[in-house]
Amino acid sequence: MRFRLGEFSAGHPMVNSPQPLRTRLTDLLGCDYPIIQAGMGGPGRSELCAAVTAAGAFGCIGMVKERPELIQREVAAVRDRTNRSFGVNLVPSVTDPVLLDEELEACSAAKIEVMVFFWDVRADIVDRAHKAGCKVLYQVGSLADAIAASRAGADAIICQGFEAGGHVHGKVTAMVLLPQVAAAVSIPVIGAGGFGSGASLVAALALGAEGIHCGTAFLATKESYAHDYYKQRVIDATSSDTVYSDVFAIGWPPQSPVRTIENSITKLYADNLLGHGPDDFPRDVIAQYEDDLVCRLSTWSPLRGMTGDMEALALYAGQVCGQVKRVQPAADVVHQMMEEAHSALTRLGSLK
Image (cartoon, rainbow, N blue to C red; front, side, top):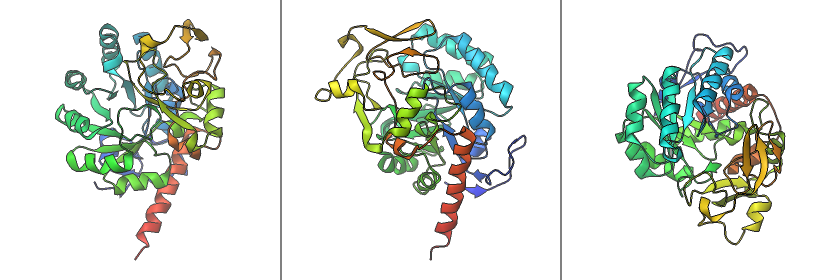
């Protein structure tokens, strides 16, 4: 891994922004900073994606199991706000095959430049994305899956540690897994799980990564599509307030663990947090989002405009939530990370 300071990319609209930091990842994605905003399957909509992208990092819209019409609208909304490249996040293995085909067609028709995939490695999906002219980032949670994704032709690997928020596909911490993955593959590797600051970006670079992938750090931003209640819970949470369980099971395959902020549901199942599947629970409606009825113990998180019992829904967050202290613009989060990263690099450079 090599990184270097550089000039701003053409079309960068920000003034008084931190100096760019170049790695193979920024070269691959065409951004100024090696920071990727996670799609997060809901909170990562067009407003957040565009704000992160315009700030010089790389934004994504989370379109997991969403209709192609929404994908088209969200893509158009991002392009109304910025002319820079961004990504679309899908999860092929948990999406109905017919809907997945429609999602991929919508992304192809929109000429999306980067696709971000997660969960089980699907070589056929990587190949299809490449044929549509897309670069592919594959998020994995194990060394074996990282090697499989590399062999499948992925352009970069997002290496997710156990401390990450949302669905967690591995059992090893990022600090342990990341250098193993970086040593095993030749393509760029991105750290995920526990990364939400400039210092952690520098740590990831030291471990062989080319950048970091952040979800929780952007959850409580002004542009996040998360519900205000959800944002406040993230701000109030400490790193020890997150729970690893698979009780939020309706909507994903059996025994698909997630990391969430503790709530009444995780307290109720405190002695039985793992080993569940979607067929283990009744469909009790507790909230509504537009025309969708939201069930207790489903994978829904509280989104902007949702009504009902927000407290009992899945409040996805990684252990890095303890660093999130207030709601602020996404651009400020990006620039604060980069200012801290440059300060850390300067400090390390002064060591004898």
